[in-house]
Length: 153
Image 1 (cartoon, helix red, strand yellow):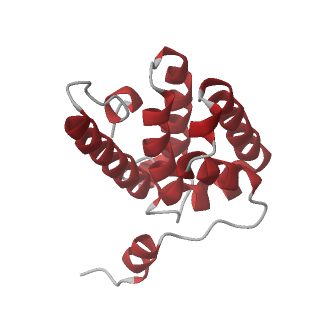
Image 2 (cartoon, helix red, strand yellow; image 1 turned 60 degrees about the vertical axis):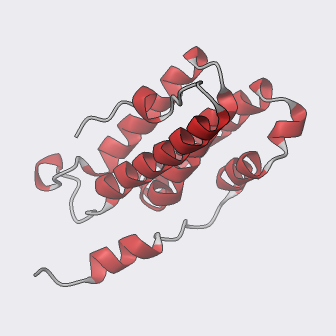
């Protein structure tokens, strides 16, 4: 499964309503991608995980971060990132330990340097700060927990 972070986080610039719709769609796609990648943690073997597992989630996150310097609107880039983290942090943190924490701190610094101070204290930036500061295990998203616990049909 190959979904480009650029395609997920680049809203059109036609008008505010289209931007809001594109941002919402980008958030949903990022959340869905994270859920697909992290829905099966039964094995580290990529062959047994249909969507690439936690490694695919880490790869997507790395590609997303590598593309950030080319983006013109860092605030619009933050929403899909948070949607992705909401659904993947519970699996990424234990799999990548210190690397995940360092990665979040780096992303936080990147956004802090590029967002106006007023925007950085907004809800999205505060949520990124919360992700970066979390030292305890991230909760499994409720929908994913239901999906994992349900018996196969």
